[in-house]
Image (cartoon, rainbow, N blue to C red; front, side, top):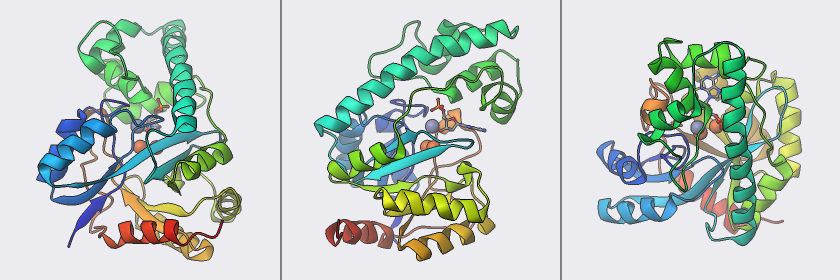
Length: 291
Ligand code: AMP
Ligand code: ZN
Ligand code: FE
Ligand code: FE
């Protein structure tokens, strides 16, 4: 079977593998077709593509866009989009700027709470240098890693539960695109939108169905039924949603390397392996779309 994984991160967002390392690891894991989905940027695409060519892996252009949502998290995955699309590039630049402005604010809030931590330490933990390298970004997993390194917390989960999650002392909201804007940008760039890890929206089935209906109105055409953060029961619910709204079922590990310990590449739940049929379904959906 040709296995696929459509959700993973490089050092161009908050993964710990460089684009080349990640694609080589895909090869090692026996994946035939993958999509690299960095947060709010496609800057790793060219490097991934070159390495994919060397390794004989099929690479589908991808991205994961953070959208406005309360009280949970709403991430929209885009696949098959043109990374040179001007509107998309502009939107990514705006969002990256918001992220850069957020980083010192997170540090300030943690310091005000009494933690001993500097932005330089986070940058150093993330990239081994003192100043932010061009084209790279910091995400909360980097803050988590630094808190572990400094002995302030023991695990990644503890860092989020105590300090970094919504409502906790180090949480700073960042400006995000609306889901409507995110989905239109993806479609106008030739791509197809899938709602990432729906479990993280933290809604009961009834509310979830309403939200999915809204997203479908906005142009959503796929749903990430399989993700390392979702269990068999979740998968069943999301499969049901997919059938209810005629959405393509996508899946991915959400691999971040050392920045998200415990999640390996290609793993989206025990016994779950996604085949190349998923890729064909996405292509068919794009080809036969009516609006
Ligand atoms: P950011 O884009 O900087 O807000 O960071 C988002 C990333 O943090 C997500 O992609 C996850 O990898 C990670 N994350 C968010 N919430 C949690 C959580 N509760 N536990 C562990 N990791 C989380
Ligand atoms: Zn991430
Ligand atoms: Fe996500
Ligand atoms: Fe992700």
